[in-house]
Length: 156
Picture: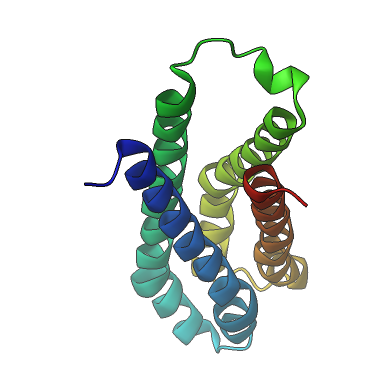
């Protein structure tokens, strides 16, 4: 029977991989196409399809964060948290988790504002550029978090 640590680790890895894939689709498929759509098609996409994509991202983020916390608890019992500040492994995990938290805050804080303006037919080219740029920046940040976590788990 697999240990709870292995189960938490697999949930964490799979949720993160799906989240990373979703960001790739947003950055390189959906947003470049949406910005080229006629206004009515864009409104339809942003009001009918985009909320489902956003909800999926929210669930994947929650699964990643909760499984990461569970994994941390299983491994440390949340005792001796100072070890995170005094070891290379701990610092890498903190840095990766911090970057993941930044992307989480952007997802829950900024994305809804862009979505509303985009769905409302805002034709401002700056909004269209930002709507394409945000997922790409998110992809860079989340990829860096992934690299930090892999180095923490497996070494360099």
